[in-house]
Image (cartoon, rainbow, N blue to C red; front, side):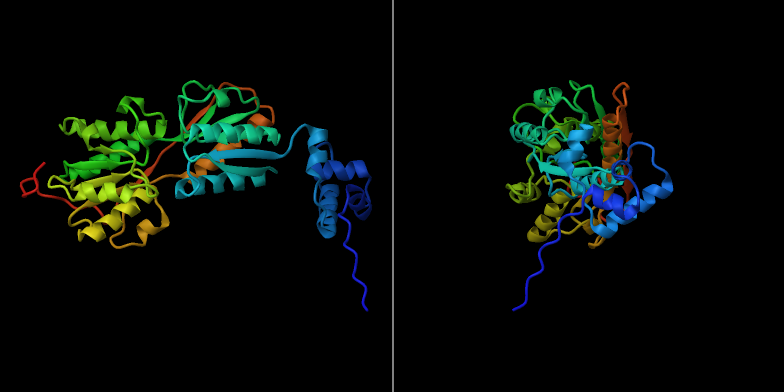
Length: 355
């Protein structure tokens, strides 16, 4: 009867030191990337650690340095491809700088976000990146005692580093493209739910995009553009029903500006169900250059958002703060790029469907 080989004990810093031919203190400095260690010695220690399968003891490192080597990230909708790319940028940037990432989803709910911040704080993370669910409910973020960076959204009440997109200008540019093509009944669709007046929108990204849309519409002489803004168009809710009802109206829009690629996909499904064509019956522009937007026929005109760069900028700023940077709050605004494809058609203003 054969004997089972007992499991090998995890390699320790002492094991790595012996294999590399250095002292335990030198091995610890090389592995922890602190203190004075020559390049050749560091390379020898790292090679020994890899050969032995050494894994650092995170708890011990935290006790000795006061850091966990981990940051937290909270986004509103983890299924949204835009946030997926941003998180990838954060993860890649964090890994390159020696940090791990804990990701959480708030579902755009302030209470859920508050609870998540508390949970992450108990895990002794070194800092936090948040796409805040609501600008009016941020006491938990204001009271967070470690470095904080806001991503995608601004909050006037928080004096912290922020990385955002140029949402208003991008929305105005996309709307102007549709206006220049002769469209006047342009619907703006957003997943955000609105409980009160449009002046009470609690997410800066949403407010800025709608402001850009409204500005372009008003510049074209179209009164009350807010009447063409439709809230709560969510794929998980009754978004499909809302879109179909909108497109079945006698005064249906001739063009749609979708606030994200998930909504744009629902628009495509609705047009197919109703027997409408794009761009023959309906022109479409969407925020976010999702992979599918260039693969369908016709390819969809989009506002390309540098989501990966957004995430990398956010994590870079956060780790600078973790490393001790003391400076006034910084704001980085990234531009979007309009990619014109095949989903927008010119219309004749004298045609039977009149604005």
